[in-house]
Image (tube, rainbow, N blue to C red):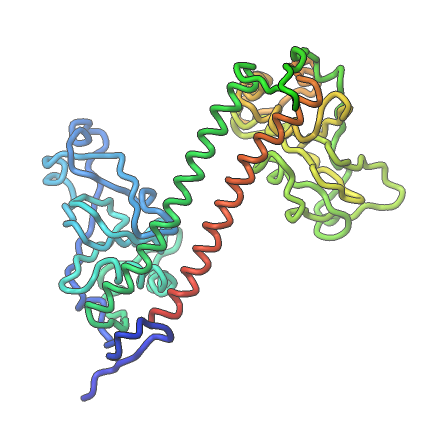
Length: 410
């Protein structure tokens, strides 16, 4: 009987042979995992890496976060096993769809079904499985927690090329992942630099000079209540009012970023006779409630003009004179660490934390002159522009990679 064969849409020109259908169960040996007793502390003071499903990255097979190590005794007295280098780590429950290749011998939790390939490229198979992750999910069983076992997936079929083509394909996608990793490292370094320089700017260890090299005047302390006023978000709205109508700023838009992303508005019905406060360019918005005190009072600024815009009811707005406080400077003033430390002190509650606007308005901030505020904002926004540009490079690379994977695998 002739073997079932296939070829991908896109491939390297030096390869001509058809890909051959193979059962997953014929590709190697399966090995599971387990968790040593966490109450026995000595088990967790060894040198054998042990990982759980949360240690596997979502978007790459190349990186594993290893932070826990167990002893040989822990291996012997639990269901976990030492998985050899170049094995395919497959999360089989609580995170199905994550795959990685082990770069060293290690152990996994019971949330893994691992494959030790007999002759095929582990990276090729891991990329392949990652692309076809929905197939693994379809084989999963269970109610509250879905998962698959070796017997569930053993008969799955894949089209596999010769080893030389596998290695060429996996090397190509590995190079893309390495480039993405470099972009992520660049973002990490830029964010560290930004954090460090912001601390020095707002502690005034770093001062800017004007265009002719002259020092700016000293910063002055002002209470927030002296330079601005607060206002509430939407009131008197029911669930039926949302979904269409006028745009409003959502809680998460404020929490996620120091500037409002106007592409993420939701919508609310506003009657012509309603007295709802409209949002204006340069207003600063603060989250008034949070599950943890460290997340209270997160701030975001509207730096674009929108004709008719409102604010959600779980936040409040702060409007100051732009002659005293530049909106572009506010973006950084209210997110710097020294201000965040002070605003966290306003958190009140036990299971849910809230912040008093009265106490907020009593807070003092040190403010430079508008020309120096502009210098500071321009400097920090240039760093943010580099970070955002690098994020876009990552997004483009990942979309490009996904499109190529769909064409280069059968």
